[in-house]
Structure formats: structure tokens, C-alpha cells
Length: 431
Image (tube, rainbow, N blue to C red; front, side, top):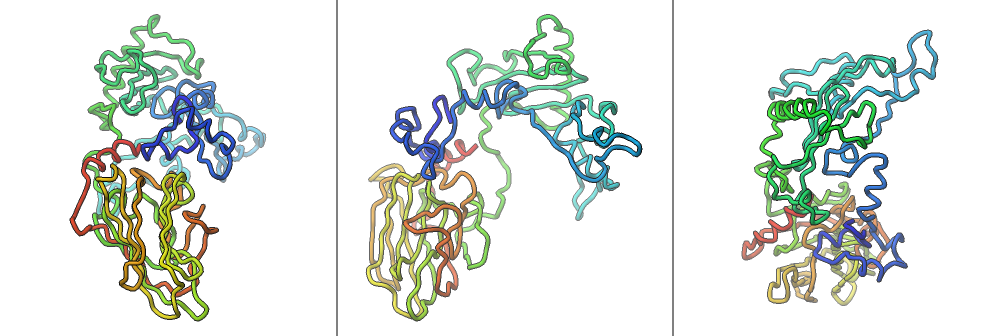
């Protein structure tokens, strides 16, 4: 939420100010259904009490999480007190240990080859013994951490940790917050977390030999598990294959679950068309043909009392709807909307044109459109309904009452236009 928090977290991903003045201007609505508030850095820090710092970093505030385990095998040993299985465990556990423990409890060995693919060895170690015995020996002695060049290493009750700033999340103007500072100039801290889990007493100056030992262990583990080279500006993966193959045409049908935004067609700042084929029954039809997003950003192609409509919602602050005049008659229809960038009108401006059965019925200029995200959680692409909060002026899910055959989204664009600069900005900001 930044130093002052924000009224709508999605402002950040769409190039809008989310400073204190912007939030205070809407303070009466903050916390209500029309806000998507996010708390400021101070509350994030306080929320991690008693641990230091926060996510993306390797102090305990960024890596320490509670874990509750229940189920068969967790009960007290035969003859023991039932409460013995319900107290706190102090053994050091990492997330990679969970899979190893499940395999162990189930009596299943990790296969060396699965479906013809050679598997990596399990990195974790089973903590099965500690599930039934709070005094069981430590199962894990060493664990490295690395997040955006912040580094840490745990070893037998000790922890060495170093902070390195990210260029997209600089908190102060101090030298410690300089993302361009060489990694070997980062300041390492040392804590005996077995006795000091909140990392209050830095022992780096009084135990330099222990710090050097753990630093060397960090390099060994980082090399072994592929954490190198260090990169503090790694806001998006380089060279990683896409989750789905690149396509220019998508076809959707009624009955499917919402498609997450990450794997839905990328229509932002690109020419695209949305075309729906459907039948209107006697008495007319209404409802959503295709919608993506919700109250805080998105688009919807829909019928209002039989009249074709297209709504574009920019970040929950600007909603524009164009419509097609008279209600559609009984029978088969095809309606579509065509959007194209309008760089003369602004960096994120687009034009929208609504077509009904081959005729152009309405156009509009959209001064601002979403740069990065329609929604931050849930509210994916829906065919025949609108899940979650509504994009337009209707109550969700507003399911279509006619017979919807298909909706086709084409992102090829008549000019094959792709804004490389916009894609780069989007990639850098979506972490």
C-alpha cells in the first residue's frame, strides 16, 4: 500500500495516484464495498510483530509463517497424554519439508521418473517424528533463503541475514536502500534465533567467525539449488515458457468456470474484437455474454432488457457504456465490440465500436484503459455470466437468459499491433 496506504490497490497497476490526498478524498467510502483498500507500510510492519520487516525479504517478517497440523498420526503416542500432541513444536521447519513429510507419513517414496520425466530429488526432510513427539531431534540443520537478492541462512539455531533493496520498492533514501549498491557491500546481520526468534540482538560484531561460517554456507547452498546469479530487479521471470501457448483467437462457451486473468486473452492496449453468437427466445433476453473483472475494473458485453451493451470500467473510477438502441427481436443474432488503441488521445486511450448483426450502432472514445490489471484477485473471464462483483450497472451474476452458442475473442489485430513498451512496463509491475 505504499507509505500512506491506498483507497484502491488497483490504482498502482493502472498508473493512477494513490497518495494520501487521493485516499482522503474518498475516506468516507474507505472500507466499504466500493473500495479495495490496502494498508500502508507501517501497518504491514506492525502486522508482522514480533518479527522484522516483511514479504520479499528474508528477515523473519518475510519468511516466518505459522503452521497448524492435524490428522491421523498427529495424535499422542499410545499411553501418552492427548495434550502431548497439541502443544507447540520448536523444531525448525521449512515449506519444502511438507512434501517430504506427506510422503513419509503415507509410506510413499518419491519416484525417480514420473511420466517419463526425471524428477529432481526431494529437497525437504520429513518432520514426522515431531508430530508425535515434541522433544524429537531436529530434522533440519541448514536452510538457505533468497528473495530479490535478500539473503539468509539458518544453521543449527543461528541465522545470518542480509537486506538488499529492490528498485521497484525503495522505502527510504538511505544507502541501505540503494538497489544499485554492490551485493558484496550489503550489511550482514547475525542472530541466535534459537533464543532470539524476533532477531533483536545482532551478534555480527561479537561473533564474526560464526557469521563468516554461515555466509560461506549460504554460497554453497545457493550454488547447489540454483539461486545464482543474484538479481534484485527480477520483477518477472526471464526465459520461462508461458503457461499456455501464444494464441490470437479464443472461443468460449457457457458452463465454464471463470478463467483467471493470467491465462485469459490479453486485451490491454491491443486491438481486439469480442463476438458473441446467440439466440433470443420469445419474450426477449438479457444478461452477460462475456465479462472480465468486476467493480474495480474490467469489461462486459451484455444485454440490458434486450438491448446490446458494452461497458468498460476503468479501475472503478470511470465506467463507460455504449448501447445498440432497440431490443433484439426473437431469433439468431451476432453482436460484437471492436477496440483499438488511440495513441493520439493518450497513452492508454482506446476507441470502442459496437456492432449488431453486421451494423455499426455505437462508438466511444475511452480516455483511460487498464494498463496492467482488471482485478487483483478472482473475478476472471466469464462466459454467460459475471462472477463476483459486477463490471456494469447490473447485479451479478446476471446470467444470460437466451441461448448462447459461443463468444470469440480475437487479439490478432488488423494491424498486428503490439506495444512492446507497454508490455515491458506491464511485466515490470506485475510482481
